[in-house]
Image (cartoon, rainbow, N blue to C red; front, side, top):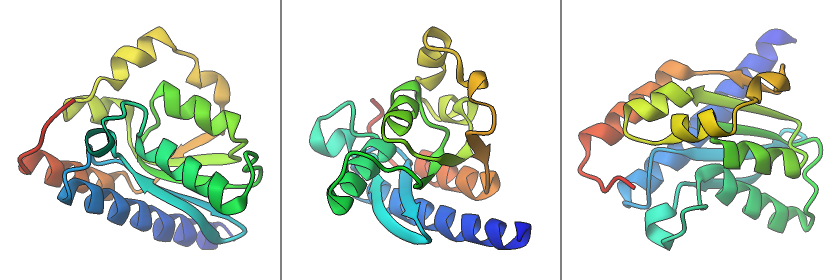
Length: 160
């Protein structure tokens, strides 16, 4: 059973990585891609579109949550699981909780996000408390996501 869950996590995280890569290739924003899965099926996917949309809230998780809610015709995503390339910032973590996402799997950490120029750590210091969510978030496929971050750093891009 554990092996099957790990294989599924690996499959969905790879989809999140592919989604992020699509976004950075098009210059939409940072290397953050997300897929949302319910009952083994992808119900929403998204990537960071901050630059494309001139929307500071359009992180990968927010984009995917909006699309999943639209696709499912509900604001309540109970039972869904979210896979994302970077540990959610405080805004995205709260959105996951508001949407009733059951579990969050992330690749790179807040510290990794900061290493490539993002300000997540600053906001985490202000809105700290994720340690109270024991078991809600789990790191998976960090090495694959770090490779994606390295691809992003190697490309010319506008940091926001």
